[in-house]
Amino acid sequence: MLGYVVKRGRWAQHPELLLARSRNGVVRVADLETLEMPSKTIYSRCLPGGPWQRLLPGIVLLHDQKPTPSELVTAALLYSGAKTMLTGIEACRLHGLRPSALPDDPALHVLIPHDRKIRSVGFVTTERTLRLPAPVNRNGVPLAPLIRATTDTVRRLVDPLVSEELLIEAIQQGRCHPKALLWELDHGTQRGTAVPRRILSDWVDIRSMAESRAKALSRRLKTPPSHWNAELFDASGIYLGRPDAWWDDVGLVWEIDSFDFHFRRAGYQRTVDRNTRYATSGIVVVQTLPSQLLDDPAGVVSDLESAWQVAASRPRPQVRLAVAA
Image (cartoon, rainbow, N blue to C red; front, side):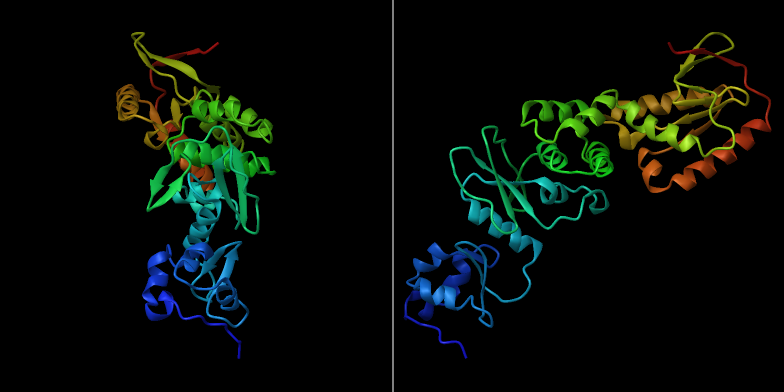
C-alpha cells in the first residue's frame, strides 16, 4: 500500500472541488495547491498504483486510466498557458478533415506567444510565434485556423505523398484555396516548405490539381483522351465549354471540377449550365468528383470505359474544337 501523506484541507472536506477546478478531469498542480493540498500529496497520488497520473510537468489527470485524446489536448493547453492554441495534425482533425488523410502521429503541436518560453516535453511540441492568429473555437478548444494548421503540419512532414494527400483534403473538404495555403507558407518560417510550396504552386489554378490526378489515371484506359483543355464549339460556332479531357473521335467529355471542388454555389451553377450545353449538342459526359480520383480510381476507369463504348456506338456529334494554346 502506498503511504500517501494527507493533510486535511478544503479538498478533503469537499472532494467535488477537485473536479470543479479541473478541465475535463485535467488540472494544474498549482490549482490543487490552492485547495490546501500539499504538492507531496499530489505527486504521491500520481505514483504507479495511485488514483491519478501525471501527464505533463505540473499537470495531473484525476484518474488512472488511459488518457483520451480530449484529455491530452486539455493537458497540452493547460501546460502551455494563456493564448495557446492547438495546431498541426490534431487541429486539422478537430476542424473536420477526414482521418484517412491525416498521418498517424500522437504528438500535439501548440502555438504560443513569442515572448513566452515554454519547452517542448513529452507528447507536446511548443512553437513560439510572432504570427499568432486569432483562434477558432471548436467545442471549447482553441484551434489555429485550418489554413495555418494545415501548413504547420505539412512543413513537418517528410513524405511528399502524405503532404499532397493532406493538402488535397484541406482544399476539397476544408475549402482552403491553394493561393491561401501558399500565402501562409510564404509568410511563415521557410523550414520544411519546399515540397508543399512546389505542390501548391502547381495548383494555383485549382483545376490543375484534379487534372494532374486525372492525367495519371487516364494512362490506365484502353483509349486515353485525345485532348486536354480543348475549347469546344457546336456546328454554329457557339462555345460549349473547355472540358478537362476530350475524345475527339467519339465525342466524349470528362469533367472533374464538380461541386465538391467549388468554393461558391455560383461555380456549381456554371457546371450545370455547361453540362446542359454538352448534352443538347449530343456529347456524352462523364462527371467525376475529385474525391473519386482518390477514393475509387478503379470505378472512375470503369465509368470512362463504359462511356467510351456508349459514345462510340453513336454518330459523332457535330462539334469542333480549338486546342488551347
